[in-house]
Structure formats: C-alpha cells, structure tokens
Amino acid sequence: MTTPTPSQPHNPLHGKTLEAIVTELAEYYGWEGLGERIPVRCFTFEPSVNSSLKFLRKTPWAREKVEGLYLFMLREIRRQGGVQ
Image (cartoon, rainbow, N blue to C red; front, side, top):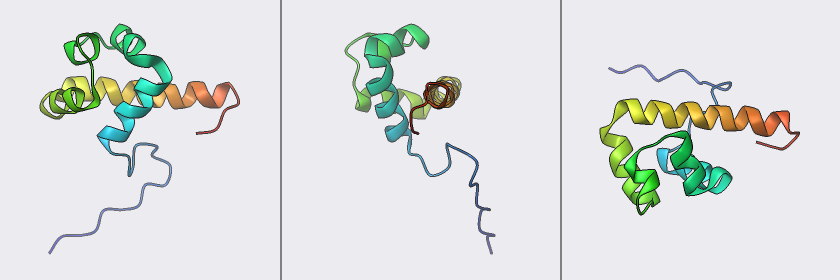
C-alpha cells in the first residue's frame, strides 16, 4: 500500500508541470534570455517547448537549473510587486 504524498502548500513547484514552467520562463525571459541564463542547445538553437521538454526530461541537471530559474523568477516578480 502506498501512502499519499503530503500536501506542499508552500512549495511553488508543487503541482506545476515542466511544460508550464518552461512556458512561463519563455514568456518572461524570451527564448534568447532563457538561453543566456541556461546555455543549453534546446534554448539557443531553434527553441520550442517540445524540444525543451524532451531534453529536460532526460537531463536531471538541466531540469534542476530550470526549476531554480523558475523559483528565482517568482521571487523577482514578487519583489517587483507583481502577482505570481
């Protein structure tokens, strides 16, 4: 029997799909800005959400960087007085 995972109300990544994270980052920074912050080919050469997802699902270190940048973006938005 598996135990249900505990709720994580204060974790901004909880319930977010990788696709939603990549889409929000691309909208906020643009693909060029994203490629400058995380210099991987899927962001710098013919970038798309689908190619990024394919790469990030196979590459844990890159996914960690994307999740870290997403958390940084949320803090930046909050600092600027925007909404999450």
